[in-house]
Picture 1 (cartoon, each protein chain N blue to C red):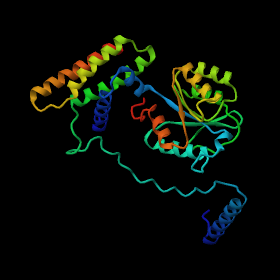
Picture 2: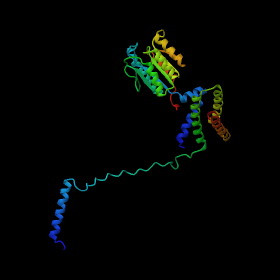
Picture 3: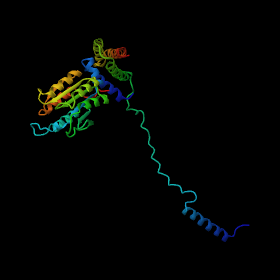
Picture 4: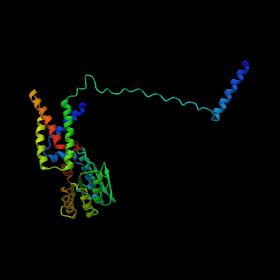
Length: 189
Length: 129
């Protein structure tokens, strides 16, 4: 057994020693989070800085991934979902149900959705979430009083996740809040 | 009857011409391709470096085993679900582990840490299997 293995084991044990609960300990090792980002055409809207929401989100995700090794999938177009290294250009519709199904197929056990609107189909999105069966945390970019925000709350409640309001005018805040739902990935099995 | 020098010379010339004609017509054995240069011999890295690679210890191996047991325990709990009893047992395990991984400034402390590490491993085996 090499000294590297012994050192790695000692580091892992020290890290897990800091877990305050069994739930925390298990989550750190077994949680497979997938970040689903809405790249529908509504994300081409502008924010107060003069840039588009999609450009701001691109920076948020890029900065987030410097410290948190979370895979990202973009959903847009006509039922298009794909893993991405960088948030792509915004276009088309909001196939959230397809994105959640993608998460199920990829073996994720935790989804974080960042969206600014209503999905193409709320019933299909709810059905996909039930099928997924694990927590879906939602970050809704917009007015907390519209139907989109209400849908986000219902989706999170259905899955045992949390619904959060976010503003692309405060990208660091959004980045920090998303990071709060993620582990750094160093303990993930 | 032995051939005269002239006859030998004519025969050799004829044989060479026939060989050349056959080669031109694709008849006969193809010439061997030039041999590829042999790859330089590489020596496998030694399994251990005398004077540099530390000797393995049972303490180190225990740490590796314990870390692997923790991974197994996490996956097992994720599969079967976490109960309050499991949470309480984990809390006790964390305390034992803290003793095992704590600083050892004396031989007595090292002995205590070794015992705690043994106990931590046994506890995890009981919780996991």
